[in-house]
Image (cartoon, rainbow, N blue to C red; front, top):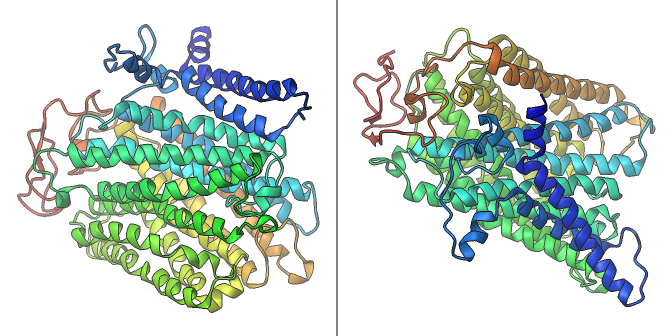
Length: 626
């Protein structure tokens, strides 16, 4: 027990947090000291000092963890060979608390962090949902309510980004036959720089919070409490992490695919990861500009968005949504890739229209850059611009529809098991939930209906259906499906199914309830509502559904944690998959493939006789023709 505690307390994570605290204090003290030399008073929450301290604190975190050590040694001409395995004299599990360059370790670090952040964001949602279950203010005031729902939004965004990082980092190199990512040090940096960013966002709640929602709209952001500055800086650093990670993934896929793995022989999830990385690499820079301008306006007195000084708040919305609409597909595309990856395995037949599904991911990424202004139909946009953006928004339905038709055709006359395992249940649930998000989206993309429903709870219901169906359900499907690969053990099937059957109907009630109260006039981002609307009973159902979803996620976490010790060792290929990662041991070796393999066939030829996808890997007998 004491040894375990000592290992944790001397880990890179704890050193990083200590470095962030020290760096923040030094940065704040530096600005305060300069003011003292000039004879000026410095309030306790002086924004320029707090902002500078936050930046130095992030650098202190990175120095404390040691994630910059190799690069600093390289600068002065010292050799920096990549080290693999746990630190000397420490157990294997200690790798997850320290800087490690193995893509599988980093993927699990992303995944665990994502689940922890998901719990925090979900807890905030339950707190303000209980407040909304009755009219009148029960136990929160307006400021607390606004801070909670604003924090819920950005924290859940960060959690989903972490989930994307988990799946892409762990799976992509395995799926293409690579030993690791192209730039292992950059890969570790991408994860570790996101940790102080999350701490900045959470600490912003302790110094006044912010009441702008996760969008951080100017001019609200210019008048929000001091916690707004920490939110903006944390958001900026999360984006920086995304850019670094996406560049790494694109280079990895471009240069490290196995022999014979042409683009149209890649697993469909890798196509989704590539499309996602293209969005992250290009669009994230735009929101970085918007956040930088907001911080400069608050801290340095520059003027970009405040109309009283000649600024234009609509400029912020253009910059923000040019990133933030495509970023929806950063979550959704990997989730849809998981659905397309798993369905052929369980249907025991080829993925219908593989090439069309692959290219549809790129099409969604491309069209996603052309629709941002549908978020601004009510912002005073010129009529001549509204119509083109309405049509481009409708165009997104085409490549998305390609995926739906592929899934239906893959299921059609397939051989789905009579007792579906948990991953398949979550895949089918994801399709049903994403369909709700899909059919309710065009209503918001059409000008006349959007003018009526904008900023109503219809938007809340639609967005949650899109995120749950497009990412959360597929993410849970991926966790269960690849759990034997990560741990070498099976999960508890009964608990997995209990998780699903609690979560799916509860989500339907929650999402449809949110859209229903929106149609009746319930506005989003408000702490109270008129009893005359007659929607209090629906809000009670929404709140109860949120609680059930929360309990189901706790059951999943219990299942994943304790199955590592309590469940039997998994078969080498429990799903009878053709994918390369299932043809090696579980968990995979340090460098993935001891023997390089060659791709000689198609990835999804399930149920066809005499077909081979890869060779030169220790063969696993997968029955064909079934």
